[in-house]
Length: 118
Image (cartoon, rainbow, N blue to C red; front, side):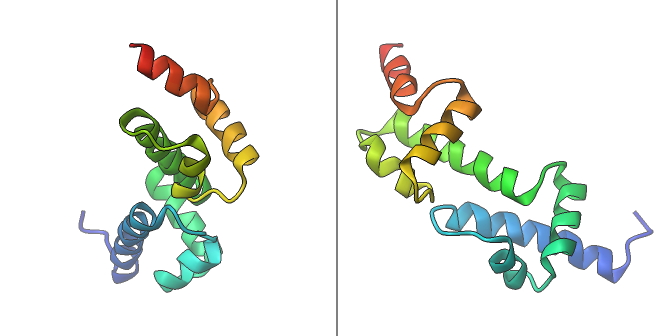
């Protein structure tokens, strides 16, 4: 790809760095402003680059990653669901439950029961 400019290269590295930051800090409060500051870009430019590179928004990516981690915790552990939502970065149990159901079609409790019955 001979058309890459230093700005393009920096943008690619910034998105790769951002993904690493999200995947290692998913349990924390990850605002767009915080993340943009970490990779030294404006929030709007970061959003644009991220969507262009991944096909999804930063917020959707964070939520999808957190849901996959929640699923792992529910599959592989005896953690209480009441602890899992905090472990994956949600501060509100109800919102976590709604998000989980939208993502997987089951509540966390239903998901765990189904997973354990297999």
